[in-house]
Every structure is written in structure tokens, then in C-alpha cells.
Length: 40
Image 1 (tube, rainbow, N blue to C red):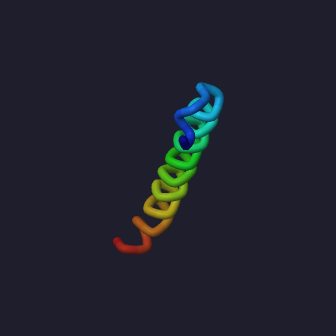
Image 2: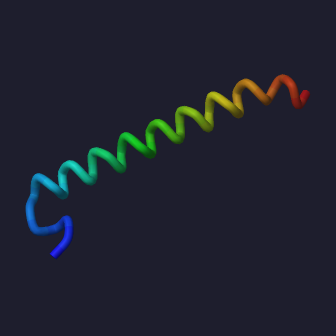
């Protein structure tokens, strides 16, 4: 069994993955944006 037994679980898992990726990207861009001038 697993997550694929119900569409709701699949939807929730996808939503979590998308949110996690978005937050990670945002944090990465923010940190690189802040450290960029310091590197120059």
C-alpha cells in the first residue's frame, strides 16, 4: 500500500512537496541574494 491508495493522500503529498520546494527555492534565492554583495 502506501500513499497511492487514495487520491487525497496523493494530492496532499504533492502539495507538501510543492510547498517544500517553493520554500527551499525562496530561502536559497534569499540567502544567495544577501550573500552576493558581500562576495563582491
